[in-house]
Image (cartoon, rainbow, N blue to C red):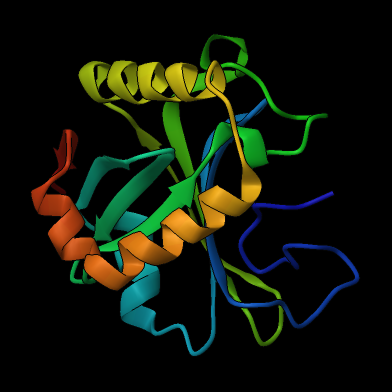
Length: 174
């Protein structure tokens, strides 16, 4: 059981976690998990209440969720419907919430949740993202090709450059 309660361990009974950024759609809905070390107070504030910019960039078999919170730089999380564990993998219309993004920020050194935010997606952005995921889900998948393609994209583009090529974008100012 994973928690999204601030101050609680993200994974009860487990302290140190590996740094990662993971976006996925599962039976609960859209989620973005950010696990990193040395989280600053500014980063916590940006996630909790800063302006939000989201984008979607598609390159071959990969959907990249692009994101920027408050004063942070653009970042990304690659996604494939096929990599979500089968027990929680669903089509967008089957998800509990398909029009919000749950963001959880976790300190990697102790595994504690530092910030949580539920972001309402604009109708247009949610519709486009869910359509891209449905198209991807109905396509074929090769794990090795997927991994190679991610590396190729990262060798060619930064998150900022991907943002310039994004097919969908939304902005929430606070």
